Length: 554
Image (cartoon, rainbow, N blue to C red; front, side):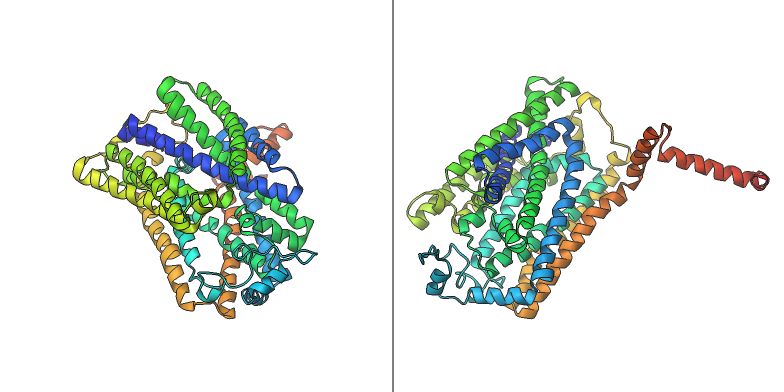
């Protein structure tokens, strides 16, 4: 991403968006370690400080050795395991242990309790209550239609949804790991892969929330809001349903998710340091070996730094949920300038720099002012409310977008020729491996762009606008409506698991067969591979057709 910024807008913009890229990687990795360390401590008793240092080593070891190829291979294996655990949990909740009707009845019961009844339910053996309204799942939900959990008409839900969109726009546009994965793939594959990957990924929050998330509320497990914010709902429910086996499955799922995403983040940071700092400003003629050495050093250093940084965040009272909501405040202002960079010929580099920094400054001011106005003081708790986080996120993305548009349209309009972009990007040792004529064909690139643009907008509108709007007339879900909702969640989860497991194998079947045949030939002291054998078979068939008498004689 930063190399493209440098190629179009120059050094100042390059340094600016390099800062935001580092922020994105640090924030995403912080969330991984905060949630992972909290879950490991809850399930195993290992101190979160020790867990914060041990977890990165699972990433460091194979990422530093294997690089991006190891990340791709490991990500597939990890994702398959994650989805295996996902469908296991869905099956346990809605098929084996409970049903949608039972969960519905439990949720209705949960919101029916009075404060006095909730205090009695959430009390210790001595009768002393630890119930705090709004901190535990008991009684009507403030801001929800009818005080119910079974509705899309939710004030807090709407605010979280907007914050979620802004923050994830930030990660997709600013996080180097998304860009490097797209660049490493063929254009046609990248377009289809990202769209299909997004559809499959949605099963994780949707299906997990519908199963484990609602079950924690339905069973009224003693999980506080801060514990839920630390990511402790899935392990608590899994342990409740399956005992130690459930805890072990969640630990495996957690480790797979952390290592998969953590390796991508480590590679992203190493790429930024190696290419956009070391090669750009210190050693323009760096060889592939030198860049690889720098990358490996950075991966180890970044893992150790993030272990320390996550401990610091935890000590000052920040958890996974807080950092997640805060993400858009920091990186949201970089989204629209980067969008314009890739799609608008008039986009100004000076305007992008001004917009990104101004948006960040205005967002922080609005965020702090919102906490002061709402609560009369500034603290971790007051800064973490949905209203305050929403103000910071919206100011970040909207103000920067407006500033960049005005500056590019009326002050410093450009007329950039996108065909010139490639000329300003230099490859290391002119390595063109994997870039055939088809991958560089402008016609194919434009076709892939049109394909993903049309379908991307349609899918976005369906998920963000149409689906919520169609759920609003339902008000509080009826039992049958909730059963249909659960059915969709189950189908989505199983469909995504099947797709993400089998499709890569089908697409790579030829390469897999070639590797396996090569391994078999090595073991059996033979030469050749699957392709060569298939060619030999074709030659033999042609010979038989040309000389049928020889075949009869044989």
